[in-house]
Length: 270
Length: 260
Image 1 (cartoon, rainbow over the protein chains, first blue to last red):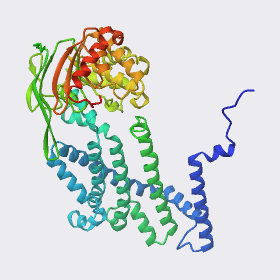
Image 2: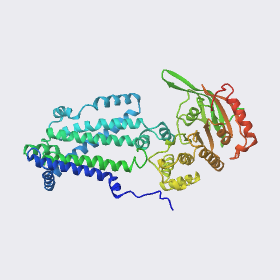
Image 3: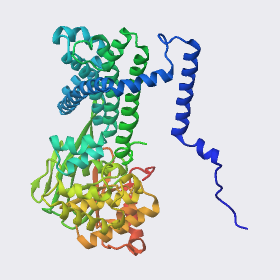
Image 4: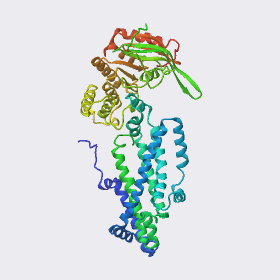
C-alpha cells in the first residue's frame, strides 16, 4: 500500500482559509446589524437604514454631485501630497550631508510632527484667507513631517555595506541618493507615504467640515456638513461611507499593490 | 623580507577611530606591498585591524598617518579600480536581480550601451557558475550564491585590485571550500591582484601566494610568509602542515589562549 503524505482539505476548511471571504462575512454581518437596528429604531432623521444609505450613495453618485466633491477633495490632497513629498525629500537630502543639518531636521520633525494640523487652521485663515490655499497649507503640514521622519529614518537605516558598495562605484551626491539611498530606504519611504496619506485624508475631511464653504464647490467634508444642514441624513451617511471606501481603496488596494510590486517582491519587507 | 614594489604599497599606515571619549589606534605603522597578480592574504585574530586596513585600501577610511599607493598614485577615496567583496550578504542591491546587480556595477562605472553591459554581465555570471540564476532577486539566492554574484560584480568592474573582506566567513564549511576552489579557478583564468582578509590559517594557506600575519591591539605586521604552491590540492601538499605550524607559532607566540 502506498502511504498518502497528502490529504485533501475539506471544502469548508478551504473556504474558511480565504482571507477576504472571512472579512467580507464580517462586513455583511455589520451591515445586517445596522439594518436591523435602524428598522427597530425607526427614526430616519437620526439613523437611516443601510439600504437607505446605499440608495442615497447611488443617487448622489448618479447625479454626479458626490463624484465631483470626491474629486475636489482628492485634487486638494494630491496637490498638498506632491508639495509635501518634494519638500520632504529636499529637506532630508539637505540634512544628511552634515551633522548639524541632521540635528536641525530631527528637532524640526520632533517638534512639528505632534502639532495637530487642524490646530493650524486659525493661523492658515489669518495668513491665506478662506479657500483652497489655507487647506493646502494645513494639508502640507499634515503630510510633510510624517514623511520626512520616515525618509530620514529610512536613510539612516541603510547599511554601511550598501553605502560602501555605492561609494565603491564612485557614486556621489545626488546620484548616490537616488541610486542607492532612496531604493534602499524604500520600505520606510512607503511607510511614510502611507502614514502621511492617512494623516492627510483625515485632516482634509476635518478641514473641509470647518471651512469647505469657501471654495465655490467644496469637497466631501463640505458635502457631509451641507447635507446635515439640509437634514438629508441618509446622504450624510452616504458621505461618511464614501470617506471610508476611499480610505480603504487607497490604503489597502493602492499601497498594498505598490508594496507587492516593490519591497515585498525584493524581499526587503516580510 | 619587505620587497619594494610599485604596484600596491602600504607604508607606515596608522589608522584610528573614535569611540566614546577615546581615540583608539586600530592599526599602527603597518607596511607591506603587493605585486600585480599576487594573492596577498591579511591574516590575524579579531582586533588586529585587518578589515580596517582593507577598508583603508578601499578608500573608505582615511589614514591617520602613512600612505597607500596604487601604481604610484596615492589613494584618498573609493573608486572602482579597487573592487570590494564584503562579508555581509546584504552587499547586493536587493531591488535588483543578480544580473541587474552586475549590470548596475558596469553601467555606473563606465560608458557602455545597455545591451553590451547586459551581455558582459551575463558572461560574468556564467563564469561564477550562476548563468541560469540571473533573473533571481538576492533574497531568492543562497548565501554562497550571493557571494558569487558579488564576485561576478567585482570581476565586471575590471578593477586593478580585488579586495575581499572575509567573503566566505558566513558560509557553511562545504560551501566555503567550494567557493575557495572557485576563487582559485577564477584567479588562474584572469590573474587579478587579490588582497584577501581572513582569520582562518587554512583559508590563508589555500588561497594565498603570500601571507601577511598581523598581531592585535594595535594591529601590527608580525611577519610575511611566502606560499609557493597554488592549486586546490594545497591541503595535501607536504609543505602545508609545516607552514601551518609555523604560522600558528607566529600568531600564538605571545597569546597562548588566543582562539583563531
